Amino acid sequence: MNEVSKRLFLSVALIVSTAMPLMAQEAHVGNLTGHAANGKKLYRRFCIGCHGPLGDGNGENAPWIDPKPRDFTAATFKCRSTPTGTLPTDQDLYNSVGRGFYNSNMPHWDALTDQNRIDLVAFIKTFSPRWTTEKPGDPITIPPEPAVTMQSITHGAELFQKMECWKCHGQQGRGDGPSAPTLTDSKDQPIRPYNFAAGGDDSRFKCGVTNQDVYRIFMTGLDGTPMPSFADVIQPNDAWDLVHFLRTLQTTRHSKENEVLKAAGGKIPVKAPDAGSDNKGSGGGQ
Amino acid sequence: MRTKQLFLVAIALMVSPALLFGAGTISGKVTYTGTPAKQKTIDMSKEPTCAKQHTTPVTTETVVTGPNNVLENVVVYISAGAPDESSAPAQAVTFTQKGCQYIPHVLAMRTGQELKVVNDDQTSHNIHPLAKVNREWNKSQPPGTPPLSEKFDKEEFIPVKCNVHPWMHGYFAVLKTSHYSISGDNGGFSLPNLPPGKYTVTAWQEDYGTQTQDVTITGNETKTVDFAFKAKPY
Image (cartoon, rainbow over the protein chains, first blue to last red):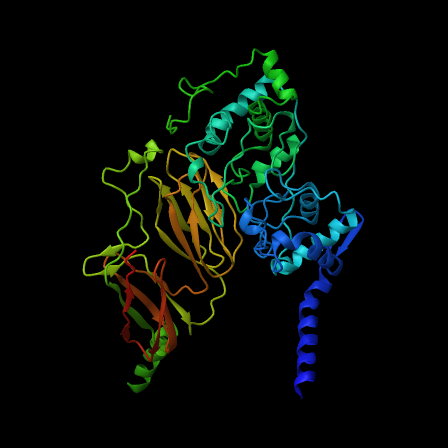
């Protein structure tokens, strides 16, 4: 074989071998079907600058942004409807691409059409072999939200103490708890816990804006970050109480929870004698 | 007479195939050369419920040494040559959080074996195995909650941490083989019940990496295999 035909052969072999997994990968949301081959072109145009040609988050922009872009080769995702340690659904990824990530450089891609988005989801899945060997987890069941009452909020406040959320999030949820300064994500990058008190009416969570999104965040955990899943230790109804309490930490945001709290006098009654909501977290140990 | 002897031998062989096939042992010591870096003292003042449990200063456990230059917590296992074992033992292994430390610091288990994680402290911990081959997960475990039951399907040395208490570090050694041994405070390890064959023995230390040696077992003998790691000064 001479040099030219040898090179030609190798190029063809390379293209075919990299295209093979791509051709297989699809994504489905509603009646949309995405194809990786189409997503590849879109990725090259919109995503490669941050997420990198290998999909590992090492794009040329990556050194200058914080938090770092998602590493698709690890197949670990923050915003999921599925339990910790499991793959997200296509819907989860589709939502993430569209919504973007609050407090990060991932924009909400409303420049993309729905078909674009689903094609990209299909392509992103080609970066890790996990998608061919594992199925996404079963989305968690979120029971209907009960009424917002002072009782619910008070119980939520008790859970906030019992689950020791304040250790990272701080007693007022400002992201200033005793463990906050040393938090690192799974790639050893420093990371800050969510600050509930910032943002007012515009405040959003990493994975959404609704009460359901809050519920999902602590019941599935944000994989790849210090935020664990509480699904094994909080009952679904208790979880809603915690959601209602967390909304009251967003002190400058208009919400049903803040209205109810205000109507009841603005203070949440505390059970334990030395665990008032104004205390700085003094290491717990009641 | 001869028949009786043969008969007894046959009974013995049926009862204990090891007698026919041989059951050798590979054992030895793990030591270090040079001077290991000093372990850092841990400041637990941010967690008084744990700090008060320790009367002597607590240090990190990246390199744990013993008298006569031995290394503890080194996982020694058969990495090649052992027959494939299908199912994991039914008994679970336990990983305990006590005094804001992991006990044991390095826990070995089989792929698919049940792991129980226990929180023996008055504070919440989160268990965050930073797996790369297995799935990475992260679960909260407040005090007074029941043990978590987990398992890992693939062979991997997984660092484990608690995000709430940044000094807490441990390892899960998830192994395909049941022929493993973790060196104790005398640096010794033992891998018994090995049929005759050619084996590769691997020793893993979390900071110093791995070393391998090839060993052949022919019958019931005990072969001594020692590992010496070069200590890192920092």
